[in-house]
Image (cartoon, rainbow, N blue to C red; front, side):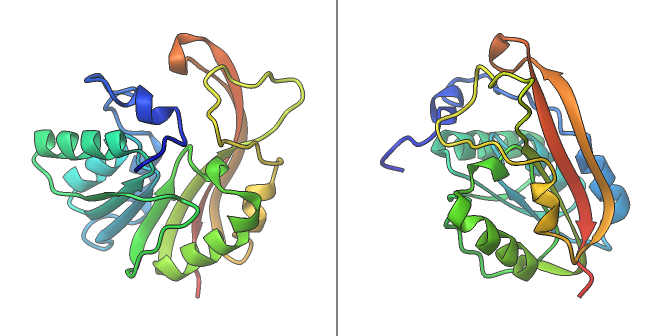
Length: 205
């Protein structure tokens, strides 16, 4: 891309993996709900350096993944090669991406807060079109709490959501799990706290 809209373009530039290479725990929860080969196709929205997308590919799924950072996609492909799997990884923006395909598992972690306000409703309508009937989705988003300071690595275009706001966009899906937690994080090397809303849900029709 010709412009840098996120600090992660620089943070992903080194040889080390900013978030490490161990997959997030929610990946195993999604696998339990839709094991391969019952579910075959996965989409990772905002894949970063690819640790979760690559993990899903090692479990047999056909994985597509995108991120706004060129360096993130380079690192994703590098990690996939190292693990001996193939991933359709490409640069795209969560606000404007277009995909002509459908998936059994759709997920996004730490990315939904990059949606511009005017694109939120359209994004979740797009998710509905991309997800097969009885397919599942995982999303999380950082939410604003007045007792928490803004994280030190808060990015250029990130925007806090309201508590519960995420869930309303998926209100006609079946909720398998929803949660709101406050947790400590050490990203960027400075301990801090986040509040996050998360959901795993199933498209019913």
